[in-house]
Length: 134
Image 1: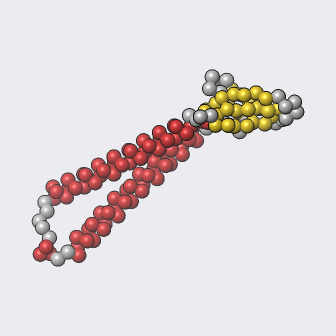
Image 2 (image 1 turned 45 degrees about the horizontal axis):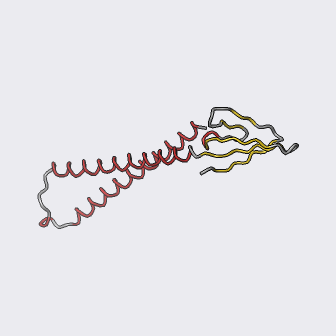
Image 3 (image 1 turned 45 degrees about the vertical axis):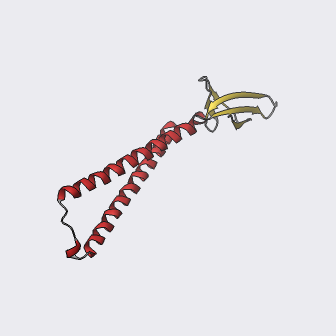
């Protein structure tokens, strides 16, 4: 379950990075098109060093934005995984109830691990009820 969540975080980070790269490429293409439409007499002589400095700032900005976005994504995923739920296991034949507390990341279809580390599996004649604790 943890491996699945890490894969989804990696997918999100790649999507974010790809989006930032597409924005940067689009910006550069539009900038070059606008520069080619300007008459030659109005163009200032810009040294290659100034262009390189501008590109460095652009790439630095994209890198910082990507790292910030990735950090926020990882934090929100961690925060969501560490929500505490109360799990009630109800035996449908006897009506007996047992209560446990578990993190969201540790909840499975028929099994879960409690906050204290106890692994619980339910049978087919038992029902699980989840309630988020605040």
